[in-house]
Length: 250
Image (cartoon, rainbow, N blue to C red):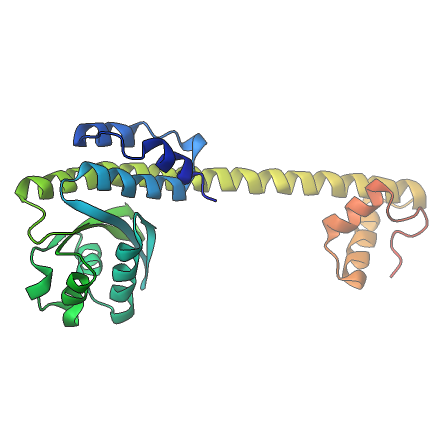
């Protein structure tokens, strides 16, 4: 379960306006959620803040691969995925051009090999996709689905574009935070592994009277013989799983 679900429960069906949405984007505490949580919060805030929005999704594109990273309804998800399958649609165009792509009348729009007609058949009368830049190698779009034709006037389009600007900052910050946290975790794991290896070398040196480099060679050859990582062999030695005379035996 994503931590974002707590945010959705907290915000469900409360009166909301566009200014509150922008303010809330700026108040996201990265230590209390993750990138997925921020993505879902962006989608839900947009659904509640943009007049005419029935469902909202966030498309992310890296290289040639596009996927829906967050959505507020299954219809939005299905219509996004149909775009990816046929490699065409407003969200992909908005992401590629970093532009705003509007579908005011889905039932009569003949672009993208009939995608818009399919959206109308699914109950979405109009669609608005706004290009979203997250990182240099990750682009995307905020996709707003309206139940009625002509659901988004010029004021709503301008508001959506402003919202995307705030959302891009929040998502970029969340990505950097996740990357930094992951790097720190990996460094901690590496330091812990090194510490247990040093301890295991000390045990082997004491038991066998070997110099440091030969003690490590015992660890390495035992690791290869058993097809077990050096740090795991070291942990076994330190915790006494391997008996005193066993270290180094193949």
